[in-house]
Image 1 (cartoon, rainbow, N blue to C red):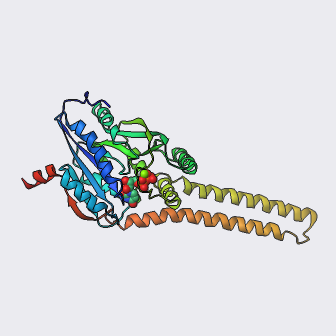
Image 2 (image 1 turned 90 degrees about the vertical axis):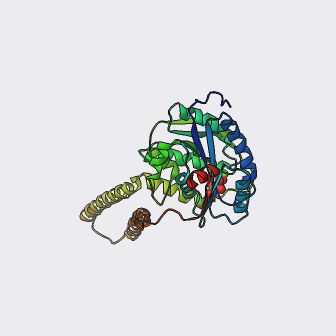
Image 3 (image 1 turned 90 degrees about the horizontal axis):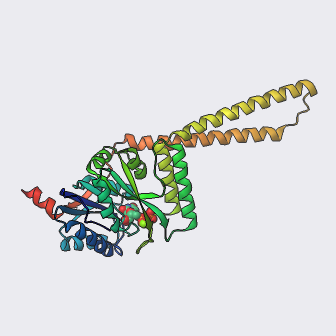
Length: 330
Ligand code: UDP
Ligand code: MG
């Protein structure tokens, strides 16, 4: 970690931390993050704020955050009115961050805060998005790793935006990138896709992903499945085309089959067999139709959610950090 070479230009750094039921890890997380920020800020021309987003935690997280705020003037707290999910909690944090550079990081210490100085260095050389790319993932099952791998490869095939594989949400964004993201207000927020969609110069830095420090992951397999469907339907209309082509193939097959039966009847007469083949065809077509309807339904449901035009989240309470508080009072 080399912070000596940071450029002399002064800037403000925001760190956005979504947290949902993280009472066990928050103090240790804050300790490690503070150590890194102290080192960065020691150079005098950097000021930092840490924006904790309490995503409707039902444990003691809210109190833990208040304690952190009392002890550290850099802490800002956004208390959401209920649990909105990580993607929206992150968005709330980005909306309230004031920094010239904004880092998004998980609270569970799976993303090592020690990478931040390196991210800043790359940002200062002109990158808008500096994302951490996993070279390993400790503490996760082989099945989860395999499905994650498959999902990223599939997304790459299906979508025009390039979503870097093995990349979480841990990254640094320039002010320009944060403003661009703030313009994307869709309800189904597949953040990895949105980060990629904005484009701008992007840079990967490799790191080894640690296991959770404490508590447990909020992602079950059903959650991950829905996450994958959100990703695909938000960034590709290819499944809609699959329905069309499946229909075409089925119709063509039926036509050829019909021709075959017609000729067979002409040549050999019709002794009324064929009940099984009939049933097979009927079931096959029924299945394809239901599947196509289901795919359309996935997109239609998302359109329904978007047309309601609801706000993404509601804030119960926002406590700015000391510096913002003072500048607001003036
Ligand atoms: N998180 C959140 N809202 C949620 C679920 C998770 O803000 O509804 C936060 C959580 O506190 C953590 C981060 O998102 O800081 C990542 O969550 P988790 O570790 O459960 O996900 P994983 O690392 O397993 O992908
Ligand atoms: Mg985690």
